[in-house]
Length: 204
Image (tube, rainbow, N blue to C red; front, top):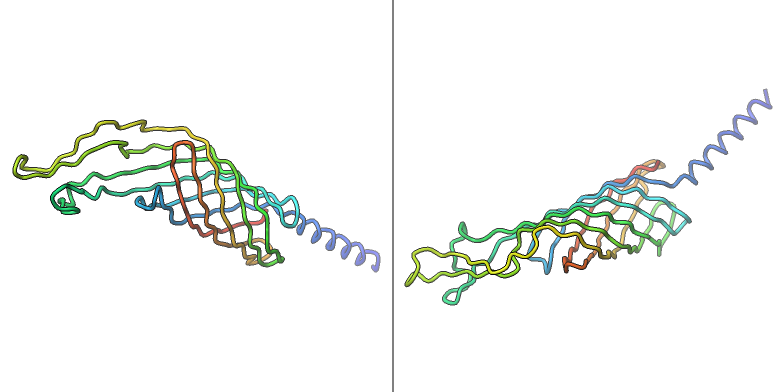
């Protein structure tokens, strides 16, 4: 009987030890994003798989999507921002990307971590934002305002870039975690995106 109890305790301790070493996580995050200089608001969402190499070092591989939108201000030479709101040009920029990030915990406890991270990105984006356009509103010559487009540029682009940011992680239990992250990214097309997201994670 003592041998059975001893073996059971040994297996339980071994199982606990293995569970503690198994630090892979599935992370889902979503939040607010800003495209460009902040003139295009939007959302960001990501599904990522994270693997911890050491206590402070972690690599996550994410599949990320962003959708940003905005509207022209309708500036004209007579009265700034006086254009009819329902007639202004609307913009949308949406993209999907692969986002591997190497994170390092500058503050680490079993229940709470603060991490900084950086990594490359590979992004596909489709945008309705014209590169060059003009807005005309002069009732002395034209009864209605109108736009002219000189160069729409490329609607769809494949780009490479980088991302950097910080994450706050809180362990809710042995199997679940939550957190908050804020990241900045840029790419070869000049698409600057800043974001802040809430994270929900499941320890695998």
